[in-house]
Length: 310
Image (cartoon, rainbow, N blue to C red):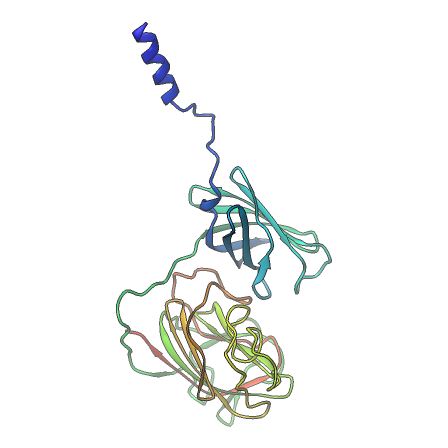
């Protein structure tokens, strides 16, 4: 009788190989760097999942274009999850649908665009990017030499020119990207835009600080002048308006960013949660380039100086 009992206990301890344990919702909570396969070409996206109350999962999502959008509910069953959001800049009228599951090394699934097209994607946990030692700075480097596009490359057919010491995109076209990549840095930029101007400066090629002809009396917003697009709003509007030379002094250490615009601190040591729309990739743990948005309205630059961390 004792032997039978021991066998019974042993059998209870052994978990049949065909039985899959259900995942816990807490395993989905957090930030995820996502890469979408768009017909063989990788495109970046980002997801944050949070617990609202005691049982509801909510979140924020950055698709392959546009700004961060709230997710009212992330439905989670077994190891699978699903959410949908209405169109933003996408073509089509249906909701964008994200379906996925937890895997041993992250998450994966399919994205159905608002026009019905479906793509596969994979995601990994986003790094914290927390720095544990004090930052020391190297020597300033002029990214723009005032003469030509040395040190830069266009994302497609180039429309950028240098005229009278001014770097300008006279018409909408390609973005301009530094050949060098950077981790932590201080960046000084002097720029000017015309009426209706719209551009941006991308930090590590992933986080856009907005340049836009925003009304001076507008309520500060993350998608207006000085905002980190879709995430961080400036504390006041300090734009000088169109046809005026203006300055950004931006410090990025890990995820913490400070933006000084026209001499005033408008974002002070705030965390950037994830990539913004227009990012080159979602590899947040890696260094990345500085890039100037050129696919919107024309903009001019006369000085771009970076001071990398040692």
